[in-house]
Length: 584
Ligand code: ATP
Image 1 (cartoon, rainbow, N blue to C red):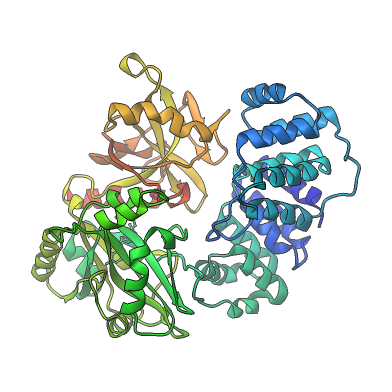
Image 2 (cartoon, helix red, strand yellow; image 1 turned 90 degrees about the vertical axis):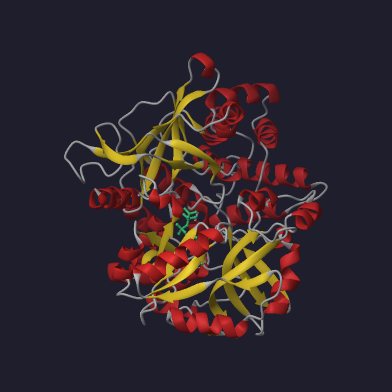
């Protein structure tokens, strides 16, 4: 398949925000790809080159892209730089420049999808001395053979800013519609949740249709998308929801960690599927010696512990360690972490995801010999509200933020990537008016006045509507920021700045600045109320009205572990609103 054809589809996709239309366009595009190309088409349409859990990113700096464009289009670097500032989007600039300059290679043989992917992969994989030149040469060669529209999308991928916004769930819709039936969609999503690899799912479907998915199983070193928890405002409600009995598990406030053990190695993955093995060197031997099998996948929460008192420390201490290369040794000594394990997904080739929770827990206990760094989470089966309350208080006294109730029923399987009622969380903040903090995405901002001139006066925050795949505004956030944070916001948001509102955002307000939805902030509010200006759950409770978070305050926590699509879902705000009504 020619990259030209793919780029033409992207043009059409970019021109609409309607999910059904986008899906139909994607189906047409996927039909044209062969099984040897489809993985690459899928990755690139998702704005990537590889599955999410691969660490390789192209990581081309703005300066290098400017140099390349200046060479290819034979224009002075300073001029390209000035135009870049004006246009603000590498893709659009590249498209304009190629239209104007018709570089030497134009008219040469058309690029295929695999050729483009191959060159971009080489760019991503090249590192060390000389890698900058290699990247520039590879990009220059690609651009010299590109049409202006092809160049637009190549440059966007290279800069990590593919903006056509095809989310994983839309690609799953399209893959199901292309290779199977609508009814098979769930099976396709499950295959993605297990493999975390849309490209692999696409190849299996292309080769053998829906039956091809049976070849995709759990594998050591391939991270599984994590199971998530729903929330309820009371322990009695949780017990009722779970049929009278629940296994309450301490809710540790740390970093979720999935440990993969196999071939004598331990590898660690975060909830974002990012490999974090190197950041926790002290855990590798500790896990290997605690694990009594040959290979497997286990999951838990990793928490920093005070070396003097043995007390759990706030989560921020671990997050400071993430991504750190220098000073890691000191951090390991100063803030060693302990992993509290709560689940097992795979053991010596046997898949435990389909096994009920109680049996999984038994297996986990059999498999783990606790040591100083690796422990089992504290769990208790409770059947009365009083027992549950006592256990919850014990969790708080032990430094945890609450409990996660796990259903002990036979159907209580591990649901990868899903937030369902088999796990329900209950935290101490739920005793406040609004039952939980929410994680909201910055989609816009209003210029600051007075003491805030030079930065933003307020941020326009949104939730994500998973069904319609749009971001809906839910509040204007202006409090809870210290001066340093407040004045660093423009810089922090610089790379997400857009010339106009993103097609993925639905807003009735007109902001002074618009951003690509990316940055996620933890926010606590007083309550969820009706609002004529916010689009969150528009018309669902009352005609001509949405829901808003009233009196929002930033808690100080940037949720760097979440991307925009993992932010609080609009459906969760609706649930919170309903729970509030029940309480009053
Ligand atoms: P929060 O808003 O509480 O930080 P979240 O939005 O990051 O939660 P949730 O699904 O809402 O994610 O809460 C579940 C998270 O709680 C898990 O991802 C895991 O990191 C953490 N956790 C801590 N202890 C446990 C436990 N015993 N069982 C399951 N998850 C646990």
